[in-house]
Length: 283
Image 1 (cartoon, rainbow, N blue to C red):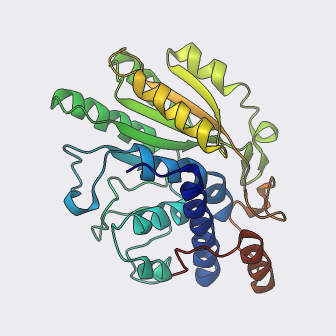
Image 2: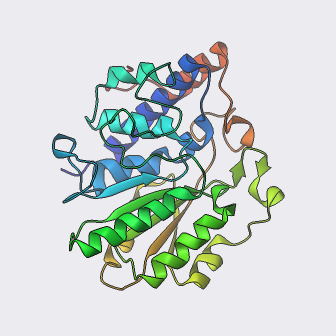
């Protein structure tokens, strides 16, 4: 049954708590983009994707596939997989520890349920998603392939090669998303490579483009509905979610400084206090 906006907000708050506690326990990780994409992926995993942890298999047959192209954002990915029942929530405590299944980037070496594709070399995830979407078409599998990219990652040429491929092969079962927070590790995206208007660029390649608010559940779910309505059109869809890096904690919000930096213990305490506790409980 679909979650209400209030229920989604509780889950998103808990996921942000998980993100911060994971990176602080590991003393490493990427909280900024994980927190900017939390609301998007919470709505995706709890209300939109056709998936079932009990019957999950890596070939994705009969279910939707999700690929995290911006592979450094594993804290949000692992939290949502655990909170959906793919593996025990307690395992989040092993994030980035030696020998863990929860590596800093998604890995398929230890068969962690829910991970379809290893990623982290930026730009490659959209290519993998396009290949998976073409495979579903060839198999006459009506499920969708979802992929989350970063806007800094979108400076990679492979993103645009995948964009051409998807249009050429009429992959209308591919829904790509961009966490459009305007920040990357070295600073504002516009000051690093001058990426410009992503909407105009994707439209020029021949994609359907939807722009939405990545922190408003109504806007997020409306964007998903519009994207899914494009199936059968012969055109892939890109949803550009306007978001804020570090969203949810005042001293982390809107700055690239938390792309790959970890709060100190006193900062973690402050951040968790700002977020507040939830009935779901910490791991």
